[in-house]
Image (cartoon, rainbow, N blue to C red; front, side):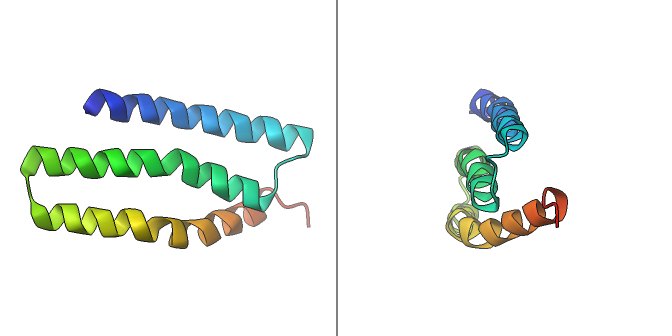
Length: 91
């Protein structure tokens, strides 16, 4: 399971590279930035939640991790759009 987390973390750098290429071509928007960020981070979050449960068998941790997986996109999407506007917006 730890190897899967490492593979996903390396894959996240691929997401960052694709964002850089889209930005260079002028095709990166706030929505794409946010979706790509969530798409790269959600598998890591899910795998970490499962790994945490398997290593400790703590039901409370599994429930809280599951709630975190469900809530993260709703909180992370507007934050990622805000980050895009702060760093990539030319206004």
